[in-house]
Image (cartoon, rainbow, N blue to C red; front, side, top):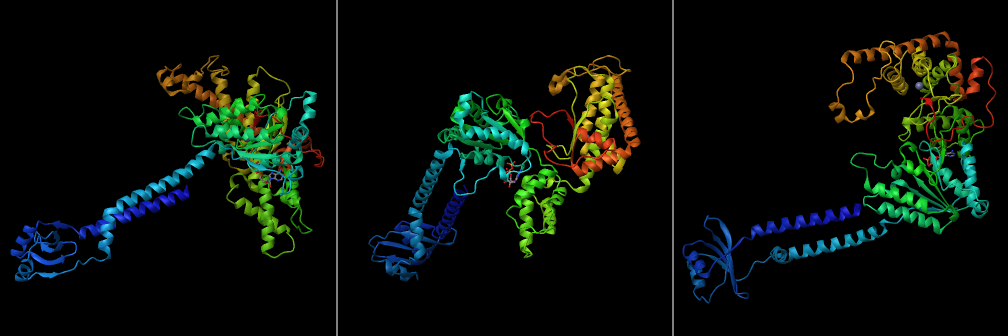
Length: 626
Ligand code: ADP
Ligand code: ZN
């Protein structure tokens, strides 16, 4: 496209230039054709200045004063006129016997007579060429751009290269076993998932995992990206999807990988203006292909996204991407392992301690850590060191943090402390109020938009919630913000999500559940359909201004009550809060039992073995606090 524009602008400039030039020359050569008689008349009244007689072409040209007394050129065809010379002499006109054709006269004549033709032909040739090239492109439009990446040549990527996400690797073992010997699995009649969806923040190693699965199984790996399927022209994406699957079937057993699935897989009909036709077609094609192909053929599809929430539910249905695996940001231990993987090929000085580096890099994902090691190696090389030292690694941390790509997700030490207190606030209040849902996990590892989270899981399914329980929950929700305020004497924007949840709860108590003593058991809910402005306006208010005021007052009262309670609880237990936060900063993730141990003043067992931060493999966010 760039070349096309360059070529086009060249031609446009050329045309403009030539036109201007010939116009310029043309102006000089405004030649009036005079009848011979008129010419003779002009001589008589002394208006002819100079004459050039061209005997060869039997033509006569020169300069004369025109009607406006301006000097201008004329041309005439002489008749046989023996008196001409005498007349010219008599009136003192300069005359000569040759045309004064200079190069530009020829050029000008040429341009005037052939220029436009040449330009048109040149332009036409140019367009033809472009169209041919475009045609070739159009022919290949429908082709999948999937790149085949086999182990040939390059070193094979295996699970050894993927660190810190052991439970994900475990989940994928089955897929590997299947790809290794598809026949064996079919004989037993087991259903192998067709599609696996890996979801998690960018840089957590989803692509790496997919490659490693192919590497482990020793099958070809076709990689493509959802954004490649979304093209300008309707139908192109769909045909690319078809092509990708064709390719897969031809090379079975193999692994097809689609990165950025959300680019095609967005909820249909979402977006203004009836959605994106092309994308919808592509998505439909993807669904059709997924339904059409059989795992018997030994093709497995792995897709990656960091927005599982926007995916069209049809994609996630059984028989499609029915296996969902969360690839979480690594915790402390995971980070240390990833660092170990990436420093395998780097010469490290003896005293380097990767654990220290891992501690200093909360919020870093695999890609950040890989980047960090690379930066450190470059720094050490620049200083002409024998090996990468601790100070290089430390400096590299700052570089990665300051770097342009991942700035937003990285967390400073102070932020880490604030988040730790915030989450400890939630957890501690949940622990202190008897009867609230048990704390399942507290984490200060960012997940999605949340910087940390406290997860409470109910012991049993509940169908009824009492007013007291909602009030307890409100206190837990506000605990994060209260803790921040108590310790740092200021509040951050981090509690935004908690506050909106709390407000929503209070709103429901008053308007839906009739739990306000003042207003009584009335439903003051506005009907849900009123989100459409038109209807809202058209509708009469269901209650008076006065009631509206009272609703506001009651809602605020409920929040205030919960807030005061949370403040008192945390103030009275500030030592426990400090203890919990300190441990959280150290470990980053605490499970329920560990919180219990800390609060009862016992020592935690040392970190070892399995990753305590094993994520629930579920696509719907579990009930939790941000
Ligand atoms: P995603 O697809 O999730 O955005 P990638 O798989 O492209 O992330 O990861 C980018 C790079 O980061 C990888 O090539 C690898 O070098 C590094 N990386 C990410 N996660 C890990 C991990 N768990 N172990 C080792 N390296 C990792
Ligand atoms: Zn919170």
